[in-house]
Image 1 (cartoon, rainbow, N blue to C red):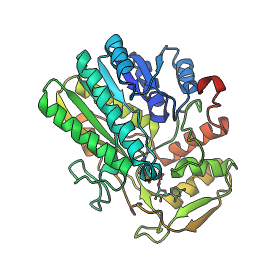
Image 2: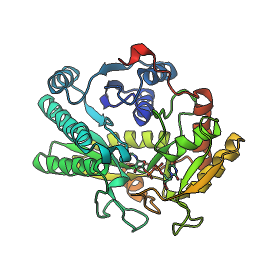
Image 3: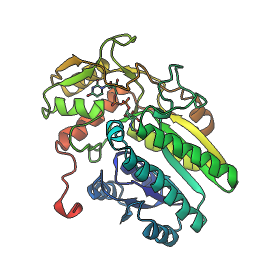
Length: 343
Ligand code: WQD
């Protein structure tokens, strides 16, 4: 199958591209490299021995996008491209709506014009808002607590209405919990720019000595050790979930939503302790105030994906941390972004 992957140079995108190539698919990548580097795809090509066609393009460039999708005429699209920093979305809501929602609209128009009606959409457990019904199931009521989450919710609803309007569409909405880890080679991984928003890359940078300590956002939650509990999922398991969704969509029309999580909750302190154990490095931390918008606990009920997609996460916390640490040790500064890569 020829699969177009938007945002395919990014963290989850590059790992999914690797798996698609290893499964024998033809892959084209569209990316504006605003939060990624072409280096990730150079390494994916080295790891797989397979070529990827890479197109530097922004989903907001409507006409060039229409032309490219028409020229490529993919069998399916996996749509990762989007801004994803919760805090940034609060200070720049219009940028998030424009980039995520308008960008997706442009993509859907380009797909419709070409007759490509098979889409995997990268959504997030953030659409469950501050729900306390745990474990989270796909029928849990959705809500948004920040502009980023609202863009994901809006896009999910747009896709539901699109599928209702035209039975030709086959759409999989995948709700990620907390993606972490890296490919076992240590060659590709998460490469946050500036100060990492998310816990795991921040802890990795403390372990490598790039930052002095972890700020634990609150230790007074109603959890076992008082710190926030999340459902961390290995990025390779997440990538495999996308291939399972593509396979399901090749046999079903309509729209479906699936949680991609392990069903296992892990606290902040458990993550810190696992990192220290695996890296054999001290990982100092200090307890600070809660971060606004955080929920105490969030973890998936993963059964629907198992029953319908035949997918479940295979890797546990130790492997997530081992693989993350290997990437961090081998690439202390992430992908060195050659000046030629980004103007
Ligand atoms: C995890 C836990 C924090 C950093 C977000 C988005 C979600 C998805 C994943 C995009 C929480 C605690 C964190 C730190 C800390 N993103 N923490 N110190 O908030 O669960 O999810 O990222 O798709 O949509 O909402 O992930 O890694 O930021 O936080 O104590 O320096 O770690 O309070 O309990 P989160 P996170």
